[in-house]
Every structure is written in structure tokens, then in C-alpha cells.
Amino acid sequence: MVHSEKLKTLLAARTQKVRAFRGMIKHEENYDENEGKNNFTYGEATSIGKQQILNYIKKDIPSLNGKFLDIGSGYGKLVTFIAEQTNMFCVGVEINQNMFEISEQICWTHRRDKIHFINDDIRNLPELIKDADVIYINCVTWNPKLVSAIFEQAEGIIYHNHLRALKLSNGKIWDYPGEPAPIHCSWQEEDQQYYRLDAKTFKND
Image (cartoon, rainbow, N blue to C red):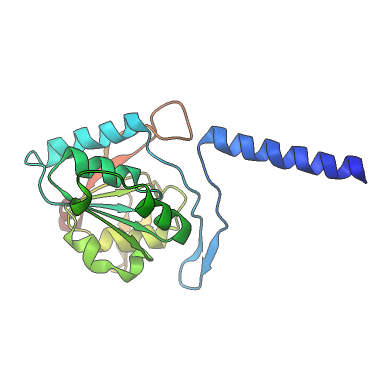
């Protein structure tokens, strides 16, 4: 029995190390009666990835003014970085209360007045999606219906990594992820497949 308990402890520790190495935090899948399962596994853009995102924003919005929205902002690191490097008002929306509280606690920056964190489900905040000039979403594990709802409401530029075709509420099938915009993230050594999608162009197709 003692050996069995020790083995369980060792396996648990090994699992934790593997997850840490991959740079991911696994959350339980939440069931939504309208969407099915949503997997909120968490990963981050690295320091290299943050710079890549900033470079994309500079091309899209040379003035570096406007509103930046990070959906699933986690600990708020990207939101803080973009606020420090641009003139944009930056909002992070995080559904996980613990991550939200930590993001508030560790937001040590001279640009705090340009940052706002919200602990909520993005589906309750459609006005934020519509008003954003730039939206960043690490949504590779999200249910397509959730991503579709975000895309339908957006009117700005979206940087995302969701590759599955989405059926919009008007019956149209979205099967074009946009232009490649690779971003370096915490769970792998090479850049990840991200895309730049202009919501206005998409809606006018």
C-alpha cells in the first residue's frame, strides 16, 4: 500500500512537470447546453510572441491608437505589454477568477490607467468585441460556436489560432482563417499557426 501511494505521488509530480514543460495549464472542460464542451486549457504568448503581436499591430494601426482586446487574458501579461508599447487602451477578459485576481495583483506598470481587466464570460460583453480595433484570441481548443460568436460581433482585426470551419448564425460557412501571422507560444519551441483576419473584409465577402 505504501509503495502504491508513493507511485501515485511520483506519477502526479511527473504529470505536473510535463505540463509545465509544455507551457500549458489544463482546465476541466465546461459544458454549455448551447455549445457543448469548451476546453479552457491555458497557454501564453512568450516574450518573442508578444513582440510578434506588437509588430503586427504596428502594420495594421501605425498610429498605435485605439482599443486592444485580449479574450482569455490569463495573467494579463500581453495586455500589460501592449499597453506599455502603444497608445492603445487595453482590455483583458478572463473567465477564470483566480487568474483574473492574479492579473490585477501583478500589473505593475506606469501605464495602469490604460489597462482594464474583467472577470467575466466574453459572451456577456458583446460591446467590447464590437468596439475593439484589435482582438487577440488563443482559441485553438475552444468550441467553434464560441469562436463563431466572437467573429460575428467583431469589426476590427483578429489574431487567432482557430482552424476549424465555423457555421455562422446566417448559415454561412467560414472556412478561411485569414493571412498567416505566426506567434511564438509557451507550449512549443517553434512558432504556432496564428492568422490575421479582418472582420470587416470577412463580413463583406
